[in-house]
Length: 357
Image (tube, rainbow, N blue to C red; front, top):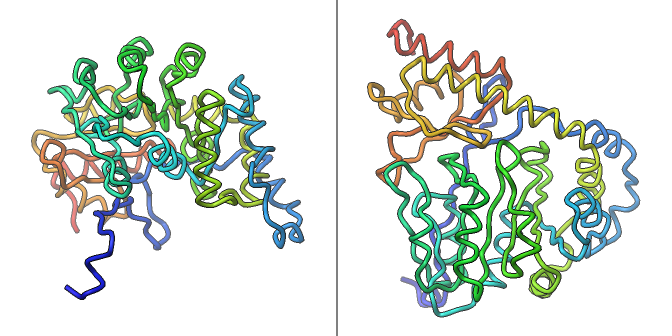
């Protein structure tokens, strides 16, 4: 070790899904929306005033926070925005989890949680999912410094009811509980109504999934005004200008078009439900997903081998090499109907052994 290395902070980083450079592929590995953003986004992009790019953006991103607040029926000072949900969750961790007691989150979940905990030196304990990959509320009854969990969970797609979510929130009024709702628009009830009852609740959402804006990086938190102010204080101490001019403008257009949002959401849900039947017909096993992906395993075909065969055929899905409980699973994003039909055509060929690599 070099002398200066002893003062370097070393962490195990998050590993994002593969972003292949080749064209002509079917990309079902990073839970992106297969449909374009709302039409108003393209129109706003065409009208972008290039001269504005030489000026700093509004540090409060007020146009965007006000549009989000209007859509969700909250006050604008109950909204915090950032560069994707990863950014806003990181700010929430940094601001809210400042205790000697460990924060709690599931053992199989979004794998950025332990990365942030390690980066910010936050003690944590993972709580094991049950044999059906479900979060158990009783595991969160212990003393802790905070709680975070996704609903639906990732990568399983399993949804907890609003009553079950509230059961966890009400256990610890003395610490912050973050409900990560990146996939809530694909089949669940948001915890949004609970904000009126619990001032220690934060809800995280994103434009990356249901609003087709993963490339623009927009995430937001909803919470009580005092809590959002504390998070903004940390943000302004870290980077005042997180949202650029173009992102703010396009984000406003994306959230204003409620009809287009609902149409895309319904289409993905319909395709997912059809795809579940196809997976069942091929002998796959999976929990009922309420997200824009399905987490599948097959008793006769190793997931790693299927993953490699699919990739060779130009179909990208996500395989998790660990932990061991999920190493024989594939997470498959719901694409267009045509993309999913191509996926199933290949799987049928693969399982018939009538295919060549």
